[in-house]
Length: 261
Image: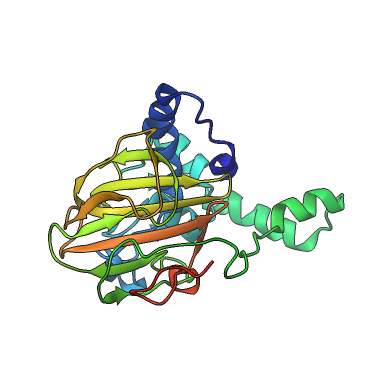
């Protein structure tokens, strides 16, 4: 997950290669389903898990299955020959090592770590930056139809309703590190890197107006609103700090106003 902190933007070709390979793989694990499949991520839609086989149901992702079965995402991908962006099919049988993974978890809970360094690495959580530490602008205007949720499987951004073709703006200055539609459920997606710590994501665009490696200024028009990968016209917007999703409403100024910082 720390790959977000180690992006190299020295050449446009490097950015393009990273965007097509690393971003797709990483976001396939980090970004959970947004408005188009939120209704399908409840416990009632969970796939069946029996022994060492898991049956995929609508709304499942490899990350979600790893959480449910106790297997790591890498292990699941390796066992089943699944490559990025980890696309799954309803009814697909996924081999897992649930029993061994659960056994390892039990041992970890009852044994003491060998050193404080290994313990801190395994349980460390990224603290959210203070409000006002960075200036953010609203990427577009409109009613919030789905707020942020920190729960497992929750919405890791906000969904803003609007009209098709409505302008979408860069929330802050930065460099475009991904433009594409390879991530199922997000449609036409744009990602912008801001310093070494922050990335913003703009999903469901109708048209995109920027390219990989392009530098953009705060408030620059980067796309138009649409419904690609969604069942309604809206913008799914995320702010991530060191790969951790933040609630954009905590950091954005009042809607309709410019940042005061």
